[in-house]
Image (cartoon, rainbow, N blue to C red):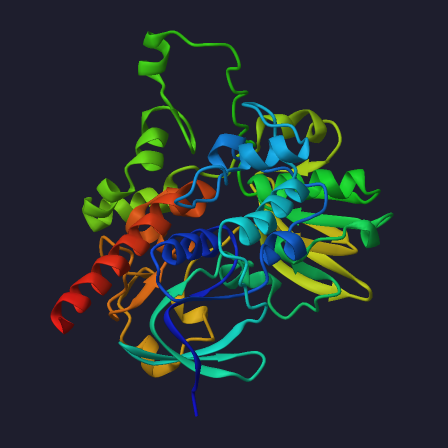
Amino acid sequence: MPNQNRPADVTVLGAGPYGLSVAAHTRAAGLRTRLLGKPMNTWAAHMPSGMLLKSECWASHLSSPAAGNGLDAWSSAHGRPYGHGTPVRVEDFIDYGRWFAENAAGGDVEETAAVRLAGAPGRYEITTADGEVFRSRTVVLALGVLPFAHRPDELDGLAPEVATHAGDLHDLSPFKGRKVAVIGAGQSALETAVLLAEAGAEPHLVARKDALRWNGRPTLEARSRIERLRAPEGGLGPGWPNWIFSNLPAAMHRAPSPARMHTVRTALGPAGAWWLRDRFEGVVPTLLGHRLVRAAQRGDGVRLELEGEAGRHVLDADHVVAGTGYRVDLDRLALIDPQLRAGIRTREGFPVLDPHLQSSMPGLYVVGLAAAGSFGPVMRFVYGAPFAAKRVAARLERGRSRAAKRAA
């Protein structure tokens, strides 16, 4: 039987930047909120040690209604660097997120995971890894990126001892002295390759693209008004398209679906951070313009068969890492009961959300990467957390007010 000892107006599944931000806003609104998950666990257990955030520091704040809970405040209080053009260490961001959980999100975080979500609108039933079963009128899915890790089909069947996704790596020291093939051309692949080299491994980057792209160095000096008009600075980068993606997610939601989905698929394509380039070039061997056609385990290692314009190429390695990003497909969320899943409308794997991030199942909200199909690229980044948290909390607060008026 469901446990009714802790009734919840809203339950947030996931305690990363989006889940913590939503909980901070719903609790401030007086909504009884249960928050499930280890704070910043994806960042702490699945991001490589030594990683730097690609986003600027001012684009990496978590959101709460109260002032003084931003990354700037935490950095000042803890003596950490903070400034435009200064990359944020992942270890600092993790500590900031955990501090935020205590100081802005109410501190009441249940460090357990949801393993099953079932039920119907108004009476969703959640089962935790601890075996508790309880009901909640509203559920917010803030599950982050890990459930959607994408690996090339050619790597299927390989043992984890020889093949992993970049999101599975934290401690790179076991790769010291080993040859590692890294597949991909985006920040994840490029930074993983660099960190492997700096850990004493022998990385080799393989990418389908003929050339790697690198983001430009940010302008540190003051820009003229004309320069700012020509290329405004947005949370996702400079230029008008990035400014629109960063600041107008509601407008993205109103855009025609085909145009919006095209933007989601193509905007902000694979590119490396400006500060990574000098650490990569001349250090990591690359094989560009090649696609993976076959992979097979050979003894304690793996053989990759690659195809390029000049023909086939074979690369033997001790390990292969897929730095191939994340692709949303709601069917991959095993925790959602099939009957509940059948009621959730999707488009190209993304849940279809209303202007308040509510799915087609009333009371079931989705934030973070999985919301990008409805609100655009900003949902792939921490910068989208304030918009999502404020929208969801405002909608729930209005719903409670209407219910109270009806009851009166």
